[in-house]
Length: 319
Ligand SMILES: Cc1ncc(C[n+]2csc(CCOP(=O)(O)OP(=O)(O)O)c2C)c(N)n1
Ligand SMILES: [Mg+2]
Image (cartoon, rainbow, N blue to C red):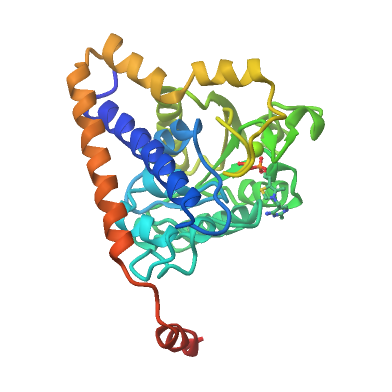
């Protein structure tokens, strides 16, 4: 069985992502966060499970739905919340916001407003790991809609030819905005795309953090041993519409209810208490810890200043 400490950390990461998203949705509705906001609710097990299998030298590239990846890669909630609120204490001095947050110190090369925009960048990071003899590997988080962009096959094919240490993760939430996957591809098991170009490819239940973590450990090990690239398709479902203002009325109620009953946090809690014998009190302590970190992050962000026009001008002079 997986070490209890790791199991508790997987739960903590997912609970942190969930708490962050729910609090930021509130802040968005209060007008404190501007622009777009794509919640990761329901998909937390993927970021948590994959990132727990990584080491300090590894890189990730993210998507437009990237808060979960950033948190799972160890970002500080104070600086993340400040970034979303457009404050200068944020990771990108408040200029990146939700869709362009990056944290180079954690090997997070950034979220991306361009669907599929992180794929070629991630292959580039994998190429640098290999050619510059670095220890790290590159993990590319991408999505079902993005897998229909030409850049997806082009990049994966190059990674395969060059045998790069790349783990490409498709977060298949079965929608691209309001288009269900069945309307955009005749083969909705997306991992099969890798097989045709000689890439070790598999599917995993994206709502089961234990499964994601275990399969990620194997995949990361293979990448480190020069057996990359690897394609992982993690099947999941959004808990709501495409973005915070989309009620998602096109999502069939019974399907949504089915996936909500398989909420990754519920599944993990069940595994922890029933199989791993973790006490309910321990889980509640973790939750309280996260909630107070989040309260503190909101306070920090609210008190932080925005960049002044002069500071902004000085920054842009550099370029
Ligand atoms: C190149 C590009 N095309 C279109 C868009 C508009 N757009 C933003 S999100 C999105 C859907 C993406 O769906 P998917 O790749 O499955 O990611 P998900 O939102 O489901 O996580 C689209 C079409 C964009 N941002 N970039
Ligand atoms: Mg999708």
